[in-house]
Length: 537
Image (cartoon, rainbow, N blue to C red; front, side, top):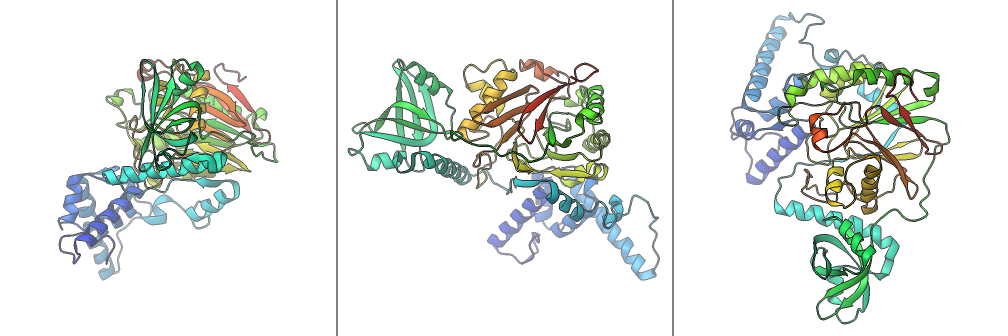
C-alpha cells in the first residue's frame, strides 16, 4: 500500500483508507501543518494527490501558512504542476531557464547551505557534543474520542503510581484493592487520582479513583493543617491518603495526605566545570511591547568580562509574539508576519557572542499546536535562526536537557495560571508565589495536573509527568522573575523582555522585565542579573 495515497480512485479498503488519511495528517502535523476539513475533503475526494502535496511542501514549505485551507491546497498543487511541466520541457530541450540566485532555487541551494557547513547533519553532531536531550515529546494525531482520554489518564495513573510505590512499597493500595479487601483492612495508604473534591459542613470530601473503582475520603474540619492541605489538592492529581477504613461504607477517614513529591535526601548532580547558563523566556519578538533597549543591554552584558564563563542560553518559550494568538493581537504587533518575527529574532540572537549555545522550546505564542505537550517549532520557521547562530537546539514543550550532567526541565508554564487560580494563598502572582506554584507542581510530579483549564492533548503517554527528578526546573509564561529551592531542586521562573501589556495588567500581574537568572552549573547557585538600569548589577 502506498502510505499517503488517499484519493477516492486508489484501491484501498475502508481500514487502509482510514490509516492512509491518519498517516497523512500525522505527517503534516509533524511538519507543522494542519488541514482544514475542506482541504482534507479536497485531497480525499480525488481532485489532488497527497503525495504531490507532501512533495510540494518539501520544496516550498516556507511560503505557505501553518493552516492549509482549500485555496492553499489548490495554489500549492497548481504551482507544483506548472513547475513539473516546466521541468519536463527542460529535460526535453536540454535548456534551463533558472537564474542562479533567483527565488526559484530549491533544496540545499535554496537555504544557502553548503556541504560540511551549516548542514542539518553537522548541527546534529554539534548538539551531541554539548547537550543531551533526555525528554522530547513524540506526538501523535489524536481524534479526541473518549477512549483516548481513558488511555491518557490510565497512563498518568500508572506512571505516578509507580513513583509513590517506591516509597510505600507493599503497604500501598488502590481504591479497587481496598474494596477487594473489605473487612480485612482497618488502616491503609490509598493512592488515586482526585476526581472530586468539595467542602461540607462537617469537613472536606475527596474522591479518589483508579482504573476501575473509587473511594471516598473524609477530612474533618477540626483537623486544621490537614484540612488546609486538602484545600490545596488539585483535581486530577495523584495523592496518597492514610487513614482508617470504614468497611461498611467503603470510605476512609484520613489523617495524612502524601504527594508523589521529591524524595527526601535527593542529591542533585553538578558539573565539574565553572560554566554558567542564562535562563530567559517570554521575549515576544514582534510585539510592540518588546523592549529592544533591554535586549541590547543583555547583549552588552554577555559580551562583558563578567559573562566570560556563560556558555548556554536557555529560552523557555514565547521567543516570538506569534500571530492570531488572542483577539485583536494585530493591534499590538510591530511585526505582523510570523516569518518576519523569526527573521527579527535571528537578527537579535546573532548579536550574541558566537560561542553561546542556545536551547529553545515553544510556548503558547509559537506557531505550533496550542495543546500540550507541544512539538518543537518546525524548521521552516527556525531557518533564519539556524543560519544566524553557531549552536542551536530546538526541542518540544516540555523537554529535559542535560548540560554537563545537570538536568534542566524546561516547561513554558501555562499551567501556572491554574495553580494561581485554584490553590489558596497564591494570589496575587509575585516572585514568591510563582516559586510556590512551581513547588506545587513539583510535589505533584506533574506539570499540569488539572485537566481542562488549558489545552492538553490526550496522548497515549502523559508527557507531563515528572518521572525523573531534575536538578533545575525552568518555567516562564507569567512574566515574573522568581527563584527558589525545594528539596535540592532549583525552581526558576525567568521573567520577560516585554513591557506590561493590557492582558498582563488585567491578570493582576506586575511584570518584572529586566531581571534574569544566571545559573552556575558547578554548584547550582543562581545569581539575578538586574538590567533595569543602564549599568547591570
